[in-house]
Amino acid sequence: AVGLGVTGAAVHAAAQAQRRAPTIARVRAIGASRRQVLASHLGQHTVVTIMAVALGTACGGALAWLLAPALVLSPQGHRAVPSVVLTWPAAPMAGVVGALLLGGLLVGVPTALAVVGRSTVAALRAGEAP
Image (tube, rainbow, N blue to C red; front, side):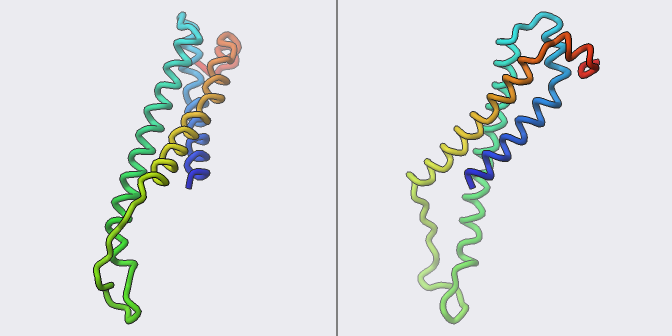
């Protein structure tokens, strides 16, 4: 789950960097510093990553709570007696969510550095930023 989540964050970060390259070149051309543009890009990546991890955790918990009673049956195929109680160990869950969050944030740094580090003049001349 962590590998899939971090891979998704990496793909999203790369796509966003490519999509925002013309805008970044324009903003750099009108005088924004690399540091300002990098902070803006990383800030947006941070917000999206936090929201994705929070939403994924909430949806996963809700689905587990809703589906657990339907998936656990007695040997005869009836509802389990006593009824199913979903237990969620906090420490392993916090570790997985923390790894997703940290990994998702870290994979955005190389793409942000690459898109901000490009030459603004070369990007504008190449037609990346009309």
